[in-house]
Image 1: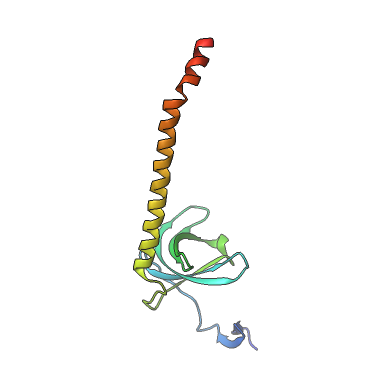
Image 2: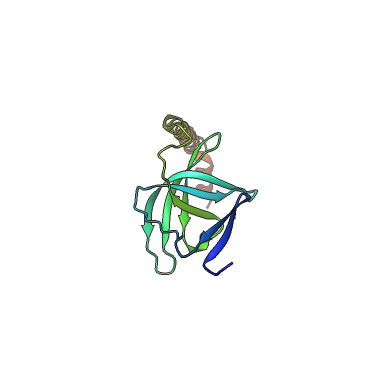
Length: 147
């Protein structure tokens, strides 16, 4: 085999690639649809659908910020940061298709449910604070009189 050709294996399928003609050139813009390949806790690769959020032109580590949907039982919007340090942890390609394996309304429903849960949690904390200020004030008044 010459230096101009390379054998690449993807999931057991071997392909011979002529490196004189094959190269990966991606052009990304903010808002572009992308597919994100991540590794989960078992080191299994998982593909997610996402969009480019921003380009952060740091001097030492330019980074592409990507919002993607983790397609699980409870889909979640997550953020990925693609730069030279993410090699092996995260990869990004342009999404050629417009399909996404999740329904828009399902994601909105889940996010609305999480918002409601957090609002209830905030209300509960406010009620505890009010109770504390009302019923525990006497402890603080006694301590200030003794000093």
